[in-house]
Length: 334
Image (tube, rainbow, N blue to C red; front, side, top):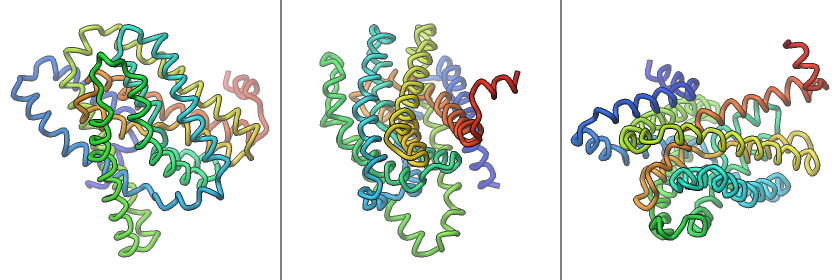
């Protein structure tokens, strides 16, 4: 029964996040000071519930295969830490010029790439799964090092952002669970066969999704008053997010078409378009030096990212692989 519940949460994460977001905003309007204090005390345990199981599913040993996949991995680093920050800065200036909190949320989305869905969507779209796994490991390790350095330049001085404090938060929220998850993975692979371990992976993914549900609810409850003070501005954060994802997917697809074979091109698209929203969410919630309202763009990105991944997967399988044009498909649907 528990396995079924966790699988259901993972499979319906978009709807779960939307429900948690709306419920948290509503509950935050009536929650007492004592209640919010209790929720704040629960943040760290919930973050561990969210991050640790996710790390068990990530195989960091894939980094050793980086030479075999230098093309897609190198391009993914270029897009993730070259193009994505530039797009985020441009969109933040165009849409969030008066709201640095939402801009910082977009920066976190842009600077923490690759999630478990990178591999999942790559496999579903018949891409190079091994290249995607290597890109996941390399980009995640790079993000831990690069994130504070980028933010120290992008975040205005009057915000009071402290890069050294963020490194400490990353160590607690990302690096320690990463090490623990990798050790757990090795123990499980020693104890179980590869097939049995794969049967456990949905449980870990479900636990992580449960953590996402809870942390979105807690974060929205704690920031409800601030977010609903200007609902029009809050809702408008969706627009730059859609533009950001669209430009990333389009750029990666173009680079893959020119420089890589189709399978590796697919891996490149998903290694750049699927951002690690769980880690972004965890760091923003836990870090004292990050403005709390930065949580909203990240929560909304949970609603935008999966559908775009599905759209590109169907584009590859139902249009490109079958030699059809988009016009033919639209004509058939209409």
